[in-house]
Length: 375
Image (cartoon, rainbow, N blue to C red; front, side):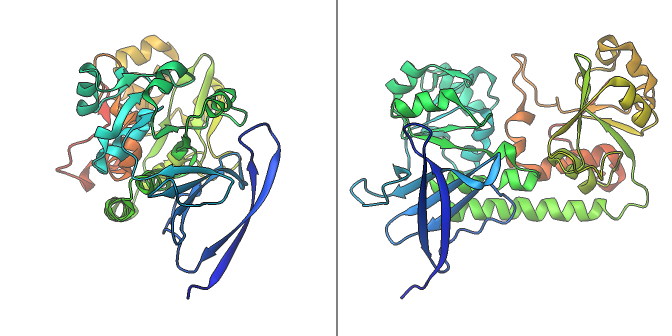
């Protein structure tokens, strides 16, 4: 007999209105999916169904949504939450970041609708879109509700971009099964990649996802260990000036942690005031970064374009000496950039790219996947 050990009190927003509802889970011993880096979700196994919990990205103590995954719609589940019959076979996606997870799981054929599909890099998805097998749902922030309802997907994978999402409320009221895939809110690359286990739960492929992620994790940690052995850590600058503001990664952001894992020395490495970006003026950036060794994640594809953007960029030694890199190696003519698509699922490759730029002697035969040295 299984012994109940886990009691979780949750605060759940009702589907109708903004009232709150308190519920309690009682979960069986040893019935939790192993999630080691991601903080945004959990999966629990009951006798006849799976319980998938998505936590509020803006308040980890709260629940954003609960899903009950069943093999048959007739299976009884608690009255709160959303019941989904799995494995799903007909889905819609709001973001290109969902694509590579589905590709690794071998489930690209289940995509029937996508937001801005022309900005997706995956060749199979682009081909299906061109052949009319995947329908465009418009922009993720203003989805074509009529088209979405016509597709009638089993689930619509969406990302939460703000706490009060009026579009999400409208879609829920229309009967669409919204599944919140919030990998972008995680604070490390490995945590973001681990969301493959979340998507896999809707396909009954958790063991496949665990195997895939474990290999990626091993590769990431292995190459990071090599980078930690260097005697000197190059200093780095990141990002670019956008309309008078330079958005710089904080030390506790996923990009700040990436720099540390790649053996870099970063001015804001000890900053923990925010988990995302620091909004700085040009003068502050110039004062702190004018003499750094390498400029990463530059906002343009060529050095000329970088100088045309702002002639003051020449004040940075890394720019004058041509040590500037951007994630543009897999960019298509229509603007689709695979860094914003498949990289979320392949942190091992992103880390290798950064190490290749900072410590080329550590990976002498490596061919970069996403990063490009500006010429």
